[in-house]
Amino acid sequence: MISSFTASANSITAGEPVTFTWSVSGATCIGLSGVTAAPASPVTVFPSVSGSYTLTASNANGTVNKSIDITVAPATPIASASIGSAAGQLVASDFTGLGIGRGSFSRIFGEPATGTNTVPRQIIKNITQYGASPISYKITASDEYPASAATFVPTSARVSAMNQLYADTGATFFVGVNLAADVPSIAVTQAQAYASLATPGSLSGMEIGNEPDNYILSDENYRTVPYYFLTDYANFEPDVLSALQMYQPAAKLVGPAWGNPKTVVGGVSGVVNDSGNPITLSDFLTAESSNLAFVSQHGYANQCIGGTKNYTGDFLLTPSAQDCVSTSYLLGGVAPTHAKGLRYRIGETNSMIRGGVSGISNTFQAALWAMDWSAGLAEGGVDGVNWYGDSQEQYYTMFTFNTNVMGGENVYTLDYVTPQYYGVLMFQQATQNSARFLPLTSYFDKLAV
Image 1: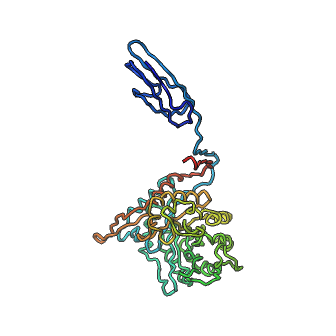
Image 2: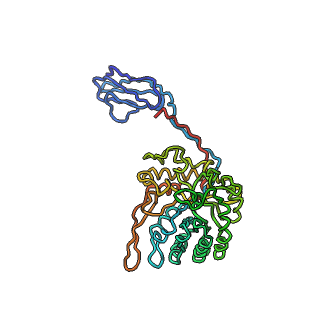
Image 3: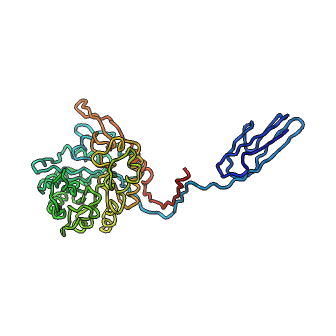
């Protein structure tokens, strides 16, 4: 009944195909071991282990079998990973925070007198639902310049929006006051307003200035080179701290809130310490650590790229998008800060400076990047980040809203949520509730794909 039974190969590597071909006559039933359906020649299989394949043909007169042995060699793995058991860096329960401009907070969250916005409250609850502590919110300093333009003073209505969010979610705030105008009394007035109007315990700290290491740049030009930052800061610090603690006795200052990751390690020549050398975070901590609640530093993914800054469509998926996650930049602040017993936050962060780039900051790659960025900073010892987003005009703002007035109250509708939010949410799911990093050893053969 079986005239022939052949295989395309008798020795293969696991995962490779073998095709069986046969010629049978006079059989009423045909079967091939390892094949569940009634086979018809030819049949292709993909063996993973060595073994015999038997062709069976039968009729009323009996049964005939023929077998072929197939030898299978193990395949060379194209990738492998092993996870160690030694627990590494702990991810702080309040690692993920948010940030916003001082003029936008009440617009987004709403004031009790004119109607609060329930949607961002639910978004915050989504972020904190996996065992996280209440969220930390940064409200950026007003850095108007010159002094005649620095008229901002927090109002009761604006601070009531903060107080309501604190009551609803437990969110705490660190807020900024003006340094750029170079008039300490302006900063003190703002500090008094924030501190006196805020619910006791809701302010975790206060920043003096916003990215003051950039004040020497031509598009700001608030200070001249060389800029003796420590002297400038010391002219503001005592009175601002006193105004803050008069109403919020447990609160301290937060800083230095520098905008350039290079400044952390002395990489900005025009901003100097008291000796005239490029300032470092260690210099700032030596002078001010006793007055600080924690340390804040800003950092965006495209700030540490050497050479070209012509961003391609998939920039956030390239290694360059993680360049700032290095001891030469942002991670350089971890050791000196922890040596002073303080926590180190990247108090303002996102994908690309100046509002992001359309087609990059507001696409799916930003979700993948946000997870990697958060993980790299957390594993490197950073204690938290604050994702900044202020308006619908910024491509990296994670959520924005439309506002309409109905019956004398504001009614809010969700405008959009960017993909980046879901990356942040995924990081929260993966790391909260006292998660720690584990060592991973991996191998990937690029030539095999």
